[in-house]
Length: 346
Ligand code: KG4
Ligand code: ZN
Image (cartoon, rainbow, N blue to C red):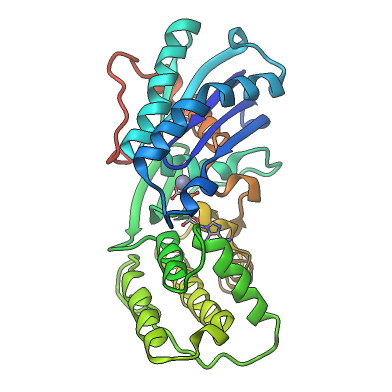
């Protein structure tokens, strides 16, 4: 069967066609119309501009996705769409488009929670599917969560951020250092420069909530600690790669420590990494080493890089696995479906 995925929760209008049978999935197209260049000049996403861009781009993106997949609307089984959370005006563009297409094409809608979408990026086209129970570490611009899954579409949040999300901390730290939006890739680039220089880092930053008894995160204090260090150092610009390295190490140490701690309390067969920050090479490498050393029985799954930051392939995948597990209960009545910026996971 074919599922069309639509994503518009932030600054990417995206559409994708997924072909699926049983637990096997294949992405036939994954089209992303990014607005990053437009928002970069303001140092962050401007919701009003994002919504207008979605309205312009969403239909051509969907048309291209169908064309690249070489299928027609009549071949689709269903339309999966991000219902929330995210920027309300951005979400509305995707949800209302999906509802209109659902009426015109007479195809059912599957609403998808954005974080669940990120998790299901790990179930795309993999030969060996992750086994349950599993823990997902979701680190994006809007969320940092540790989620326990006993089976497909059975979720329990066991850890979350108390303030800034990991990606948000990257973006804010980058802004403080005069670097462009989004901050993650540029900080990662500077950090790598220092990492591979062989120099010793002389900047110490805190690992927030490392020893707290729960599985929650807090990245706001780390950001402030970085700000104080920068304010005290008149020559910080000359050491920018060292600052980026110190910041990145603090983030990835914390994430790796918490997921391992969670897996000791909740023994699982698999650990999945998901969200935009999952594109970070140092985090991927750290988790590979730490999990194989400390949890040799647990298999780590890292999403393909093209499915880490926002995309619609992950939304189609999540929509499909909801249908796979729950059959027609996955479908929503289009008359009752609306975008929800504060959508909860269950
Ligand atoms: O999942 P995503 O595309 O959007 C949300 O759902 O929020 O994540 C975007 C976030 C941004 O904060 C961006 O700075 C971060 O992911 N990011 C990275 C990297 N690439 C993107 N963070 C660290 N290292 C990267 N390579
Ligand atoms: Zn996202």
